[in-house]
Image (cartoon, rainbow, N blue to C red; front, side, top):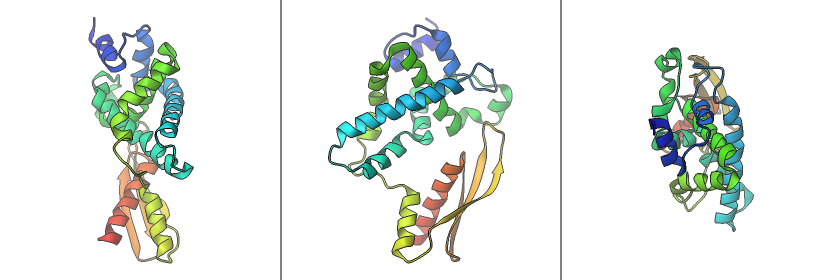
Length: 221
């Protein structure tokens, strides 16, 4: 058995039937027009359903708002990328030379998308029940890691502003650089005229979150 089928069997607990589908799930657009983007679209929905159902079962006393906080953290691109790294997906990515040179191999955007595309491929091959079981195995440590629902930094900053009679935080993009497959966004967040912080991330949302986190540290420091 070659390396990729062996790895897929380790990850999903069964050998792949349609290897070409999984190869596509690991292929970036810089390598081929037959890439992971459609599978990522599907896998994102499979993950969303599986995670929502799981959280609904695990936390029967929590209101919708707390479940949403947990959900948003667990299905974020950063979390998906972490899991892709832990599973070893990075070693099987198929990237064009330019994308590889630009650092796409370590990009949270790329790895997060690949994790979802692999899940989409597995769903097509095995169905919903095995896909659901895989999500519960791969995300188990993170789902059970926090007794309380995580508070998103942007929500924390908004609550701080309200509690201190300040205007809501304002976010603006200060810079966008890098190629399409590995962009870098620099975002500035301001609360009134006195409080400001900036941060960089692989997406606008990631940069905004990092900027909010930085400003919160300043405010509480």
